[in-house]
Amino acid sequence: QVQLVESGGGLVQAGGSLRLSCAASGRTFSRYTMGWFRQAPGKEREFVATISWSWTDGNTYYADSVKGRFTISRDNAKNTLYLQMNSLKPEDTAVYYCAADLGGVTTMASEYDYWGQGTQVTVSS
Image (tube, rainbow, N blue to C red; front, side):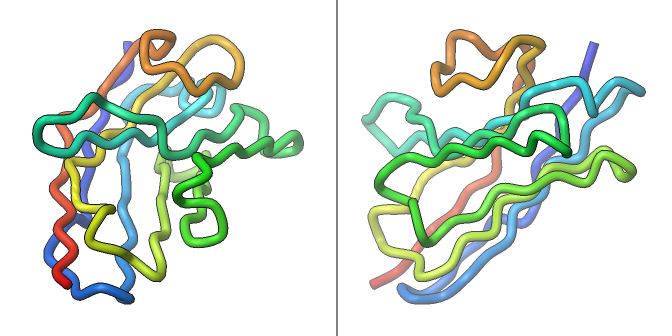
């Protein structure tokens, strides 16, 4: 069982930056593939980024819409997942969720086993 708690959301102007954090409980955090998803009002939840469980492997994947602007990382010693978001755009406005997956790297929300409650990111133009 893993519990996830996101933080770091807020209101920022277009072009600005935010760093989201996701604190995980449990001693096996390092074994989970971790991902970030987002959901805007009236839209389906969409994949943002994912990182594999092994730091030495360190596979990361990004949605095309955020590639080059967002960076996913993890600190297994702190049981924490991060999402550094730069050059934010109004279309990045959404509730951001972190998720944990016992399986391999995947961009599909249905494959993730545990979810946080979400943190709101609002980008003004």
